[in-house]
Image (tube, rainbow, N blue to C red; front, side, top):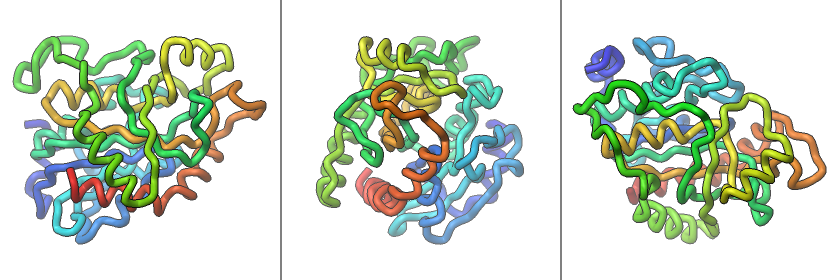
Length: 266
C-alpha cells in the first residue's frame, strides 16, 4: 500500500466508490458534498501539490444523498514540473482506497467551431500529445497489465447515463475528442489547425494521464470538458487564464447539479 493510502485509510469515515477530479475553476463541487472531510494535499505523504491558479489543492471526502464520494479539488499538471507518474499519484491512491469509477473534469479550449464558451462536452476519446505516459517504465502487475486496451478509454455506458442526466436538466451534452498538450503556453493557431486535422474537438493540459492510469487499473472513466474559450485562431481574440476562471464560475451551479446527479446514477 502506498504511503498516501496508509495515511488516508484510517482518517476516512467512509469508503468512496466514486471520485471526481475537478479542473481549473471547477472546484465548487467539492464544497457541495455532505458531511465532508477536507484534507489538504500538503498533509498527504507523496501527494503532489497544486500550484495552478483555480486549483484548491485538497481532497474532500463526503457524500451525495448518502453515496460516498471523493473529490480532488485540483490536480497536478506536467507544466508544473511534475512527471506523468506524479500526475496520477492521486488516481492510484484512490484506487487503493476502493474507488471503482472516476469522473474527470477539465477546462478546455474549443477546437470544434460548434462549441462555445460554457458548453459541457463529454469526452469520447483522446489524443495524447504530452510526450509522456504514466505507464512507462517497469509495469506493476498488481495494478494492471503491461499493455492495457484503450479502445474504450471513456466508458460508453457512462456517457449514455450522462446524456440522460443532462437532458433531465435541460442540457444537451455533445461528445468530442480531447487532445492533451503539455502547456503552459496556449496553442498557436497553426497548432490548432493541426489538431483539428487529426480529429480533435477540445484541447487542454490534463486528464489523459489520469485516464491512462485509471484504465490500467480497471477503473471506469467519464470525462467532461467545460469549454471555457475558443481555441487559438477560431476567433480573432487572444487567450488568458482569467477567462477560463470566469466561465468556470459562471458554470458552477450547472456543473454541480450535473455532477451530483451523476454520482447518484453511476
